[in-house]
Length: 125
Image (cartoon, rainbow, N blue to C red; front, top):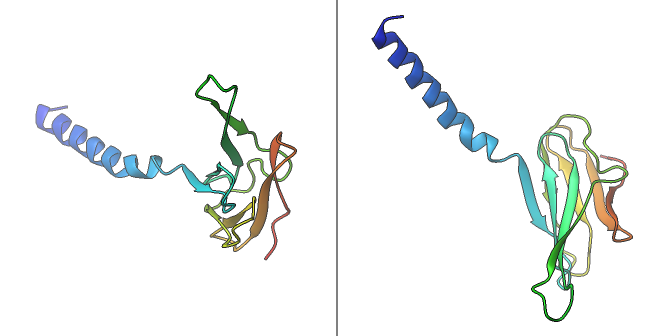
């Protein structure tokens, strides 16, 4: 392959990576729980709909604390491919969050159950 063709191919590959880079950076979406006294944040995989959550916990009075994360449990695991997002309600004491599939219009409610895992209701429209 002549040198100028290799340079053109390399330039095109670089341009494609530059375009794909931002898209790859948006794999997850993060939204805080609407509860005003809860330091919890929810995470959704935008392609698979898998939901997890994390919050801050005090380990003991002499430590800086730690991040506690809850894995996806019943209804919150990866599912049908889609375009998922999280929507917080406007209810100041609500600990859960809505997972929406922007392709299908399906909505689930997700929350941390028993300080062990994130669970979501069955999708509905």
